[in-house]
Length: 426
Image (cartoon, rainbow, N blue to C red; front, top):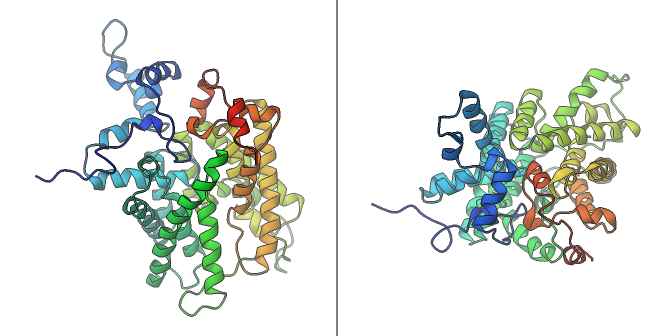
């Protein structure tokens, strides 16, 4: 019988060594990891031990339910250990689902599968494009022999998925325009090359690649096809500062409030309320703290849009909020240890990301180009280069985990040590 296909030399490296930005990091010892799991709580405890209490009796039903819920939250590291010796197609499915969740700065295959289901709910065509994009980029990384920890963590999947989703949203040929699969596959594969190139530069300063490959590929694609391409027609982006239609005069408060959860869905280019709420719920499954910061950042972005009187549609459709949501999530507990100082910094990052997005959208919109997530990407990068007292709260990328896990380990991990802070000086 043929053996299951494995990536790398023999097997994957220990999954505790996986970094949030995908680069290979220091491997935690088994003794340290066991001690940490005990202190962090039931989320990372062994299932067999949880099934019994100290007296050896079976755990109560409530405890079993709680333990079952905890097993599907966080990074779900045990799932990768389970699939380590399984067939390649099963491993690929887990990697792809992690890549889907990486779009919204999460790392949970169950959350990723729910987010993908939300896309199929909103639009089967968009769901198909997203699936093709994430699978193409992940398989390209496998063929090119990229770092196994990056492939396992879905780091090469999310940029390809975003490229495919944006191509579908701006495609003027309608749903099921099969010719679009050609640029989708080429663009998704190209994001792997850019990710590898950007990471070799940004690793010097311990900075994440984030969605730089997606932003670069999609901008180049729209510039290449132009506004009136006969084979790949597209819609032109409208600047948020353009005059509103003459029949729209008053602002609807209910529509503005509806746009706040839509801002979370717009991270996946999804403008439907139901699927956006499912995406938010899937994010909460990974990290409730991330979900709170996503909503907070989207609300901040909506407020920023109101303050400069952007088009009503930008507020109603959540377009003013998604960059703020990304900036707020990145700073509020993920790349920084959570505290009241970093919470305020996350709000400031959301405001700066939102205002930068409005400025870039007005600039690029005059050429019919979308600003994508350039604003949040550049703002978060600048935040991670901060010096002074706030730099002491920054986590080295090798130590970035689930936000709740970062809080539990704050006393153990001395974030932003002198050597690590010096490594971010440009």
